[in-house]
Image 1 (cartoon, rainbow, N blue to C red):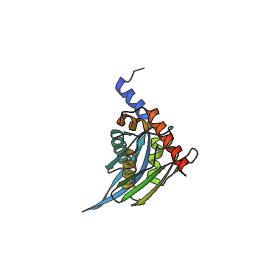
Image 2 (image 1 turned 45 degrees about the vertical axis):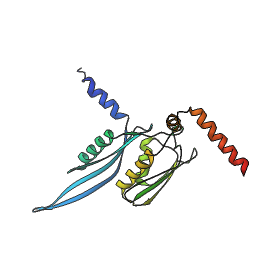
Image 3 (image 1 turned 90 degrees about the horizontal axis):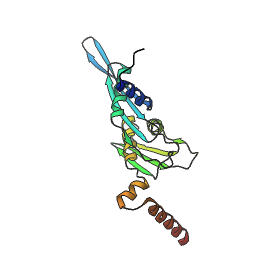
Image 4 (image 1 turned 90 degrees about the vertical axis):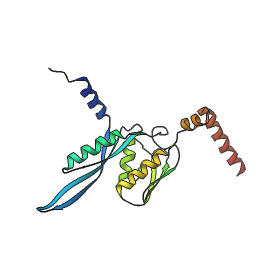
Length: 187
């Protein structure tokens, strides 16, 4: 029994940890002398369901080839998204790209993913379980996916904020609790 080269086996293992979601396929036609030539453009979202996600766009004459190109592009552009308790956002965020605007809100456990088409694919790929979202403006899947990524890139974890302010996470969270009790006392 022949063994595979080490690099190829590693690549297959690494690829199997990713979940890919086909968001949209667009068929385009080029008119030539003999008729029409069809091409396909695919939009794919790839994630490991543990906080890493990316999207890619691929174009080819055949659908499977367009999907393969889009998947490879998505794996090249992975970003890490901080999740609270591995299931939701740390805070509410807004994002936009072109005319596509999105509002993402953190949700309590058991809420589920309340989102439409392209945004749902992103949340499932990133591994988010509870989120409420609304898309405003454009319903174009390309703009919505990019706007969702813009919002997720604005997401900040307490650890990141503490590092930026040269504080400990516990000190930051006690400040937050103190501010919450002050607001209740004033009311």
